[in-house]
Length: 211
Image (cartoon, rainbow, N blue to C red; front, side):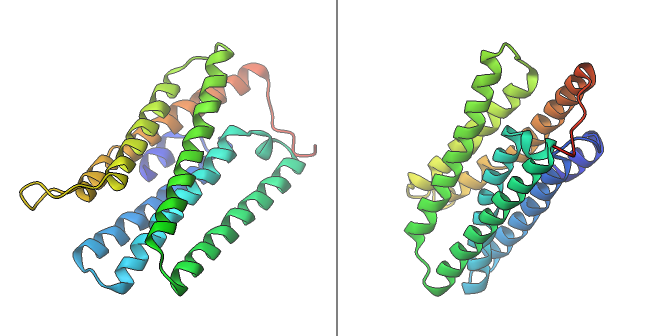
């Protein structure tokens, strides 16, 4: 995802850095998850849970940043954007601090599911509004596919079941289902960025840095 976005998304795209940071966090998540599933002890477990929660919270921030271009289009918008970003950071730090003091698996799961559902809801509302305006495009299909795969993978975590042949369990299928997600998301970002840049060029749109 990192290579794809860095190579194929224009540097002038308003959210390129947001998606590159998303890819960096994703790399950290996979590293922490690999360590935890290779060597299960208290530190690797915490790193796995903290990093997973981190990308879920960041994904919600990215969805808000994407759905509201005003945050990048004006001076006042960028101020509000930074405040919102700071709020997400504070929330995440408080969340992992509370888990560090007393790890509550149910609370952590609830928090992650609520954030994931909120992120999906924001994207679906945005996509629905785009379709309503008659602005259908290929990127919307990639977005819906990303959401379906993402939420589908969560079902394996929520509806756990005994392992088949003592090898394949619900959690392993959860990780398998998350494999295509970064590829779909990268294609969505690429195609949507291309569409948005063409629209800006056609409309003569230049982000106002002084409003």
